[in-house]
Figure 1 (cartoon, rainbow, N blue to C red):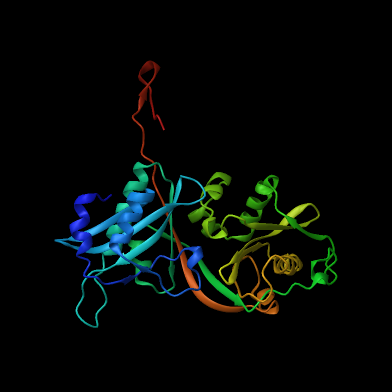
Figure 2 (cartoon, one colour):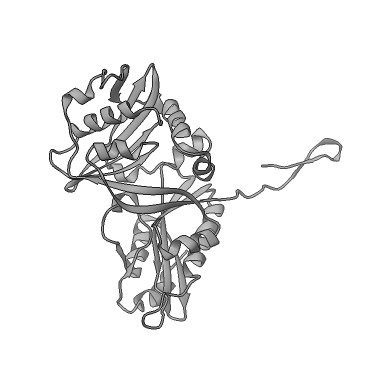
Length: 319
């Protein structure tokens, strides 16, 4: 962590602005965000954010910051800057991002955090360094863009193009277990083993910041089982949504998109991440593929408590 003594290093950031390689859900589809060292430090002191630095002499070589996800046991790296000096035309020095992430992992362990998440654009230098720091590539994500969502009322019917029994409604708190089962069906086991295998892990690692204060969440049911879900956020001249569905639920995906269209501002562009949804479903709904990202996760080992000695000299772990 940093303190007032680091201000000398902070203000000798050469006045330059460096690209932030970490991409949060709010930043999907936008130009790379700039990060300034002094801004990061003030954010930490005023808002209790987590900040890590790599400093050489009186100059900052790198900065990382993190925020809490849906629960305190999971953090998301939301700033990751390599400001290392390099000769003209050459890549910035390797190892700085790895050092920052190793600092973050060490503090996460001390704080009882179980998971660190990081999203970077496909091909970003930070991807390989994160793997060297112990992160696992959990998901390769494709961002899809549409000029607007279609909201034909006929597509929201329970009977959709011969597929009967699909209903779309607002999500309720009681749907949590059903939505977790949907997550288990929609994501491959390799992704789930990296991100979340249990209901509790899934609950705390969810990315919710992008939803804002008034999120809209929908589920699609078939014969009493949740087979699709959508989360929608609208504002700032665009809508964002994520879709989750089983492979057999194409009709439910179309119904979810139709219902989501009625919740968005007419005519605004839409960005979507989709898991378990066939590309043909998105193409038919007017989406086109755009940027690609890698979502990485670091499972943080929990410290082992001091052993407890019980009867007859048997030693058991206190964890």
